[in-house]
Length: 343
Image 1 (cartoon, rainbow, N blue to C red):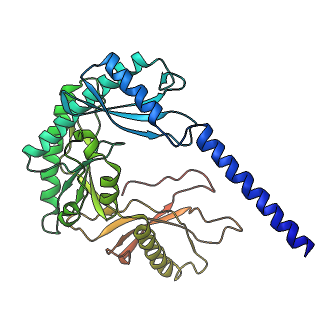
Image 2: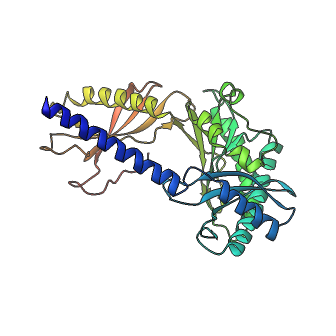
Image 3: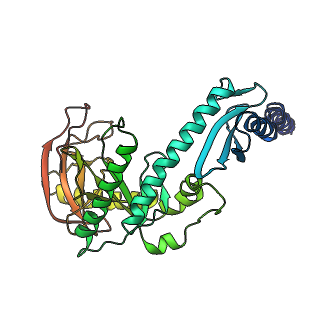
């Protein structure tokens, strides 16, 4: 009884301390409110860009103890969005004096809006509405539903549009690095159910909104890639399937199980690596995928099999291997770097 009473007393003390600590963190450090930072941002906009910048959003920057990310609309550019980190208590923006930081952010927001107009306008002229843009890569999302019979011409048609877009983008910024581009292809059914955001939001904000991108990523889609060849975009392109995490895990397990069953006929103690390759579409198909599976011919003691050998595998849409496995041979020495040849 005494031990039980003491345990309850310690739990009560620990719970009280935890609640007190959370209260101090949330109340003392101002993490749960953006009011001061928002007011500070409004004042900055009025001082530096009167009538031009309008605060439309603010959120905390957890786990930072102070400061908020402030989002501005630009009144004379409905496509542009400007974002900076504001800390009202310190009187700083992005931890520096605010004037210069705000100037750079506005310039960047206007420049990005120009490039966004190039992207959206180019695809519109090609007959494709841009329904989203990945903020990290700049890849647009469009509606396209290729079949076995149409996948090659669809990729080529999109590739011609990509070439126009990239060349127009380079004309805007000649110093930009010449590089390839990718386009995400989503089904019409998924596109029609996407959250579209408010029409009053800047275009750059609407097309990269978190709820929109989450909805598009929640279903399998094709990612079409276009490389630069001899200084220009190769319009032929290639495509791969991108699945939500749980579906990809299920696909990978099916592949690995099927490959293991086949390899055991010649290597009874074979171990399959957890390595999960990027699965590319077989040319002229939308339901045949090719990639690598790594394996070890013998168990590697207590260590996980990284895979020192590989086979090229073609599977159906569920991950079941079809046709013959194509041995690649040795792709790693010991636990060293992986060296896979091009598919």
